[in-house]
Structure formats: C-alpha cells, structure tokens
Image (cartoon, rainbow, N blue to C red; front, top):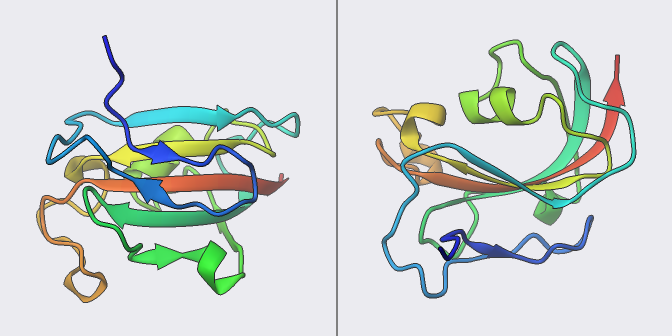
Length: 138
C-alpha cells in the first residue's frame, strides 16, 4: 500500500517546503508522525522545554501559515503541558534532539472547528508540519 503523505526534503535544518503533488484533496483522518531524520540527542520528555524550527501549512496549500525557518528564529516552549496544539503535545514526546518530523494533524488534533481565521486556517482544516528538534532542556 502506498503511503499517502506529503513530500518533504528530509535534510535536517534545511528548507522545510511541503509538497502535496499527486495527493489531491486526500486528507489523513488520523494523526500521523513520520520521522524523516532520526536524531541522536536527548529524548524529549513531558514537561521539557524544547527548541524547534518548524513550518506549517494547511493540507493542499503551497504557502505556510507560519514558519520559524522563514523567520530564522527557532521557537522554544514546554511540551506536554497543553500549551500547544494536541498534535505537538502527543507526537514530540519520546522523539530525540536532531530529529526531523512530518506531522499531519487533523482538525481534532489542531484547531478544531474554530480554526484560526487570521492565519488562514479554517475550522476543520488538516494541518501539516515539518518540525526539527534543535534542543531540549529538562
């Protein structure tokens, strides 16, 4: 069975462009986290503060609604504390520093029915992220 996921350059720290070529409107109804690059750093644990680079797009769109890569400014935040979308809290725990992940977050794991209209995210949108885990503080 062919894996129906967006294409991403796998190089850690490189451009995080996301392509939906050949996928059409097919959206994943479940949460998916695919490790594109396995890091050999510390394991992320619930409650840790992690630093990441990321890019996020609405499924099927070309341009990111947010990208720390574009800003050249990584983000830091506590993980597993309910301060982020559910997809990130559930998929980043247990991963290692130096990893590049592809995360597909259906609405129930992202912004639900409300969306974030000011960011171009409608209610019910599936979001796709590329996340590079740069650092972890216990």
